Image (cartoon, rainbow over all chains, first blue to last red; front, side, top):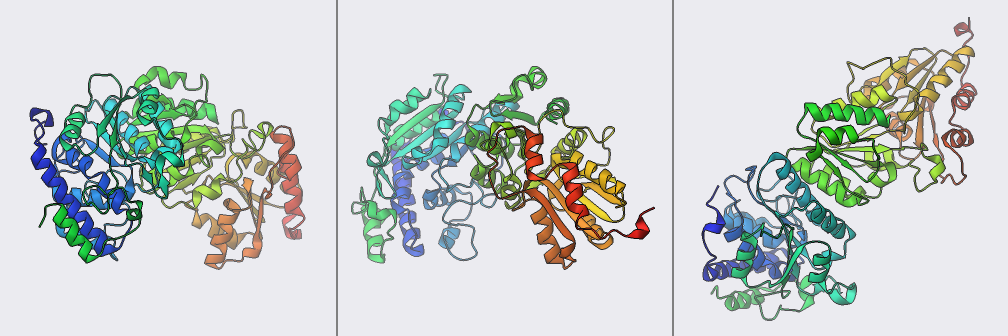
Amino acid sequence: MEAMALDRSPDGEALRAQAARIRGRVVEMCHASKSAHLGSSLSCVDVLTAAYWHALRIDPKRPDDPKRDRFILSKGHAAMAIYATLAMRGYFPEEELATYNQDDGRLAEHPPANLLPGVEAATGSLGHGLPIGLGSALAGRIKGQDYRVFALLSDGENNEGSVWEAAMFGAGQKLENVCVIVDYNKWQATGRSNETLALAPLRDKWAAFGWDAHEVDGHDVAKLAELMANVPNGSGKPVALIAHTVKGKGVSFMEDDNNWHYRAPTAEEVTEAHRELGLI
Amino acid sequence: MRNAFADELTKLGQEDPRVVMLSGDIGNKLFDKFKDAQPDRFFNCGVAEQNMMGVAAGMAMNGMRPVAYTITPFITTRCLEQIRTDAAYHEVPVTIVAVGAGLSYAGLGPTHHACEDISFLRSIPNMVVMAPGDAWEVRAALRAILRQDRPVYMRMGKKGEPVIHSGPIEDFEIGKAITIEDGSDVCLLSTGNMLPEALEAGRLLGEQGISTRVVSFHTVKPLDEACLADAFQRFQRVVTIEEHSVIGGLGAAVAEWAVDTGVDARKLMRIGTPDKFFKKSGEQEFARECLGLTGHQIAERVCATVEQRTSAVS
């Protein structure tokens, strides 16, 4: 197990550079596979970077260590982002990213069960990751282990009733070692998330459900790293970070344009994206 | 059955530190002994079954043996996707225990009836589907479930059903049916809480000179294929009996098996509930009578289709 994350403060510059590299890989993967969910993947890269390169107490060589922190990508449609993250963090070879969405591989369009190191739970149907995370946290409590559980949800995912069942349960059980991060990119598949269901005020909703809820810039990777590393934060409550993000973040012509929920970039657009990300 | 379940689970909770009890806000006082003995391993999850099932899966992924319990429709259809995706797809040892299967809670109306659960659950990969026939089978099944590593669905009746076995069933195995009475003309395969009706039907058929084997077919998935092969070979009629729809239940499973294996499927007769909601008020006994599921009605239905062998009549 690596040294406690709390021993060091986040290196913002290094984290931003890492996030850019992940975005570059995600754009390449989307182009090669012609798959959907590029915008949703790009919006949560800073959260993943803050988690895997700072906050989480993990050892990629020991993905099944019982004492590891658990990170559950509940918004499983951001599979490209978690695959690039896990590979670049050392859970499996980066070359395998080229097999994404190809025949006979391990990297399907949603993360698989019991197949890929570092994937804590198979997700893709929304509203499942948090209940699984709460069960994981309770198992730790029963066994006297102090690992933390992080669940990354999409804003559209907050439409699911099971999310709010879980919110009440997590607060009721005072699971202060659990942290929800909502990737609040203001879009769901076919429309503005606040025009679809009445999502706002989202922080107030989580607070009303008994969580220590905070709004945060979901692209301030250093701040995210600090807040996530600080779980449990002394409030005695589970923590909810409402991370304000931009769908398609990092590539100007993808930002806040919901066409990139389903569109894949051309080769020229990949080059342009890499240029904007400072990778070439 | 439910009291036996609570009692056996309390014992298992003391024997196995991995056992965790999750209740969907039912069983008032039923689990008091478990709670007293294991306060940190009992969770009232409230009326929130989707979350309860996901929590159970998360626990099972992390080395625990959660047992999730509430009334049948709410722990099956209400959270079917969590059962499928969180428990079965991850292939983790979640034990799903349903109370009030079939028409046990007839008086509560169709919202509380459960005549489709076997059908749903057995179509899910990795799932084991069980329906013990009495309180002793419930105890034995629960022990057997916690000795293995797959997700299991166990449907029970309510409380106060006749006790069939005389004591603990030492050689109980998941997927191995139990012959309660033996015979040579007709084989009744009963699953779950229909066992007393099947035994009554067997007794009445015997009085008619029809020698009847009665089997407690407590596991619907995986099927006891050896038991079925023997039944279709030796008996002129094989009858499935269940308080469950004829669509997708034990009878359907046996019919599928019969067609796939090439035995004489014409021997099969399926007794279950019709493809209809039962909307009348009244208790379980009344509902069974209306649907032709009581022992004497089963005997009459079977008798009408059996060639009585004069040699078998003394």
